[in-house]
Length: 410
Ligand code: UTP
Image (cartoon, rainbow, N blue to C red; front, side, top):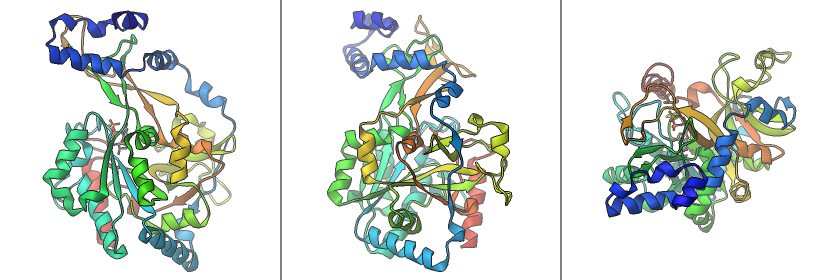
């Protein structure tokens, strides 16, 4: 093991080995065994490659067609709604909540889904999603299976939270928890982060890890066994997410799209979110920082932004996409993050600015494997109330205000 670590310049992982108890030794060795050192050293080498350079190889960026939900006439709306309800009743639909993130910006130590919103909502983020599913189940007369992706860091706590709350009244056998994959974080000098003498900082591998994790965990096999054909995939932190929208389902199924996404019109040219577009003729999402000022501001003859449809992590996939993606490893992106670590003397170092690299796969990188996808533009005030930060923009307070305003309208 020491020889292997020396080869990859990671011998510090065993620096305190002789001082550890047997249990600590075993746990550390197990974690080391789980690391793909070739991958890690490759990722570190690529960390400083320019994004522009990487994207430059993938072809020209052009606008993508989106359908505005408000523009559907009564007949189209009815067709999609009824088809969606029919597929749900036939048991061909599942909801999947990605709840494996760290929620660092929120600064909450438990799983983000267990974050409790006080008056007037008085529910945790998990309960909000659960109630939305329960009310659809009542209309359907059947139960939508609900898959919850956790991570190594929050899996136990998430399951306990559900148990303690009696699964919020959901049928326990219709909930399937599964863990996503992980990767070590690296300090700026390429060394794997240790958080104490026997623990390695292994972080969730990004929401793009969802495809591999569903396969590896048996979640995909469970879906197939239940006859599921369509899977909605969303995050835990948008408290207006519609994880049971029959119109979205009917829209994709009727138009024979294998995958789809919901979008919102950006507030201003530089709203900090990815936008849907095409790259080299394939659907994709690019960050606002990846397009030029001219493109960010460009409008059509009616004054609508050409690159104005934001990706809000509300996607739906035919199960075949999960099967396709199983073998296509998505590229990892790097984020510069803050993390505490122990130094060579075993002293815990706290930091107040980013000091380490975290590698994550993004779910939307899967889009480029397909020729087209269905994008349904929805109203921001009805479907988007994210909780990202502790205070200010996209905080529990702003999300609560949006949620209350939406409830009052209905
Ligand atoms: P974010 O990208 O906002 O990340 O996740 P986050 O971890 O919640 O928050 P920060 O960046 O640390 O502050 C969007 C959604 O994707 C899920 C999150 O749980 C959230 O629902 N996600 C993200 C995962 O399930 N796994 C991941 O590895 C990353």
